Length: 259
Image (tube, rainbow, N blue to C red; front, side, top):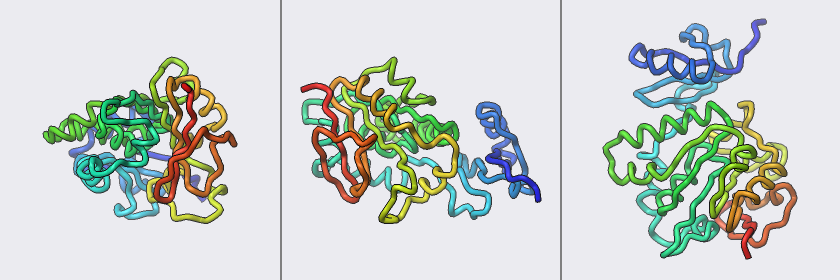
């Protein structure tokens, strides 16, 4: 029985060959054709100009990608000014105050996009190279979209790939925002996991060392650390927050660093 390798770049469109080769060199991943796809657990490929990730045993409907101009991101962009969002209260956003924010667990950039849409400048850190590549592709397409409002939002989002614990040592912001991927076994209620999270759990390098991450965040934040948690989950690293902001199916734990 042949060994299943972790991940490869799939070329199924000659138009995407140059972009695929550049990405393969950047991520140090092999390039394959369709006939070799079953030998890999995950596949990265370009589809209609968008970088997508899929498990090799799934059809394209199961793919994950970043598109800030459509879907939930576009809806949030259109409606986020209507009413005060829990995340804006958690981060201390006020009518005359837009804090600088470091998103230490950027993922696919959805929360960072909301915060940038509210007017905040963000440094987005993602430690998993494949996830960082998906986010970088989404940001690039948004910048080249011709949608001026979308371009204005993503211009406030700077992406850095690497470990937050290290990068936070050399950076400061009013707020450090964390949404770490919690271990699957902690999900006692067996809540439905989003499609992207299902894929990401199987990628190496997605789980953070929570005690180290929180300690680094507390040092880097001049006002507060905001941790997004499922409503049933224990606080990050077992540390009780200063206070909490409730939201639908989750909450924000606030750790004040300035009193």
